[in-house]
Image (cartoon, rainbow, N blue to C red; front, side):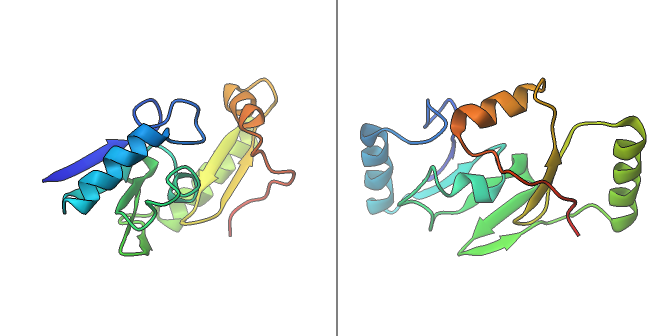
Length: 134
């Protein structure tokens, strides 16, 4: 049987870990030869720390925008370069907050008033430098 589990609010309730009773059930499913995959709004790079020990399972990140199967990361339909340029222009002209994910890296500029900034501070994973993706 195939199982696809969401992470935040389903398997993890603190945004950082999965409780041992849940990991035991996941391990049991895998040992019984069920296909277990993980899906999240998070990009793949942000899924890996939370699913430690299950990182060999298929992953669906960014609400389906990216996948990792058998260790191969892919973005089935990336934004065309012209669309990225248009987004960059809109962001600059209107001084917008943004988080822009690439296949592995990301770029962002978020004001301290933005709710995503507060969540990142709580999780202690906010970087010190931000830059545009190439």
